[in-house]
Length: 239
Length: 351
Image 1 (spheres, one colour):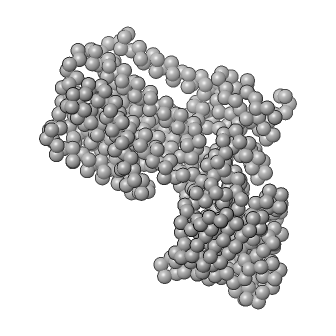
Image 2: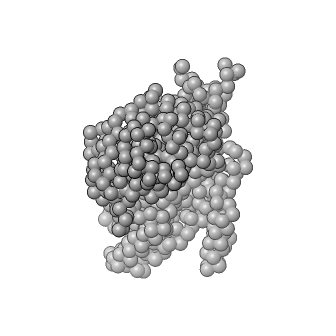
């Protein structure tokens, strides 16, 4: 469904992405791990169209989207939750989702309402539907970030550290929700997360990035046992 | 589940979506009453020339032009996040286009309507230039464009060059007839543009625009066509300011480049919107009324008057960023216009 080939992105002299190949099939659940500065978020930005690659190509559902703008990709079915939540602060929680459902989701009014109410219920925000988004706490903002992406009715969901800072109970809820989205609704998920034990509960595949490159890509247990991965990423934590 | 009409919300309810999780409604009894009240005010205003004296008609013309300007600036900044210091470009162009059409033998009043359209046409290509700018760049960039247009117009001898030109063609109307038509046309254009803004904001574009205002990149990430949404708003605001400029020409019968292209218009618009309440439909109207009375009181005090306006605007921006109407909405929790969305969770015991 999504194929990135030889993706490179330079920031000045620094190659944030240095030739990344990644293939995501429909219904996949893929985790991305790697040390800070490995280029994980940059990769997500390139996949979502927020930044353009310096070289290489990205295709989605068979179409070349290398130069396509982020909004066009959102309408094609790529949903994205940012690492630091970016709510529309002057609008209510419901209205935040409505924007996603009516533009990215392309839904008519009634269908958009229904979609929003459903995702708010799923993400535990139904009680807060009429609250202005800039009055929400951090956890609620994170939930809204996910809910708004879901409102666009995505086929592929790009998640950037949405589990950071959650309590065990909260991340258990999050895991259940993502599993449901992936296994029941068939949404492909690409999830960047440092909390590996949470990640492996959901993903069937793990990609480890280091210095703008894919170091390992495969079955989670195998990747986590890979000596290069242990040295480059897990080493310090596991020691 | 059948969609059902919520009878508890009172007059003119829109069919609300009845769903498992709740109901979404837009009209409430309050907002229906308030919107209807605004309609009644417009009707009453239309009767003013019949019932009242010439002074009031002229004063109200001035006030309505202020309302139009404030509404346009608020649409751009308060809903689209496009803070401009250059809308006087279209005020000036609207006024001068009116003069130009009149010189070509068009009836001046038709000239004002054409001038409004002309401003929309000019704004389209300019939007490709200025919408590349963000934030402060956009503010200053539009100002530069306004200055450039003002200088260019000031070089045209046919349009009176730097000394200005009178709209003599309006002399073919008797004074009271002229004042009445000017008033009615101003009322019609102000109402027209307010209704357009209202409908735009109620539609899905309204939600998208507010999303752009709050976070452009996040708006794009959920699928909002950021640039075209901004373009629609920019062209609308330009046309509205063109109308305001055309009516200013009709109201004062004389246009002069440095006055009609003056950045003071931007200062007035910013003042009205900040004091009244940015990002609210009603705020600019409140702000226009306040500015109107301040102008009556202190308008001849020159520099100190402008310094005072600036100081008040700054105080509002710092201490009351949502303005008087925003404060009212915040304190009461009420929404007077049906522009947002309210979710009512299903109250099972009521069914």
